[in-house]
Image 1 (cartoon, rainbow, N blue to C red):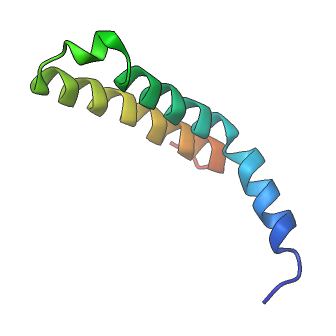
Image 2 (image 1 turned 60 degrees about the vertical axis):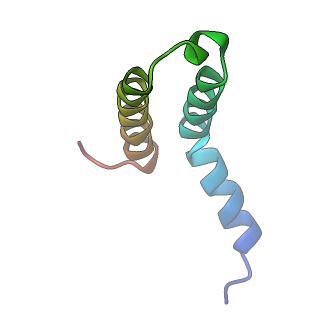
Length: 66
């Protein structure tokens, strides 16, 4: 077990900050009054699109090539 666990966690949190913000914005959008009026199908489309954005951001934050 390495002694730098706390430091590693802090680095990971900083590295993925943009992904976390984007995910939180998706969660906020789902809780909005506008989203409350969407049909199940519309919500699926919205989530599919937004979560692809989150996935792309995770790859970028990790430093992967697309």
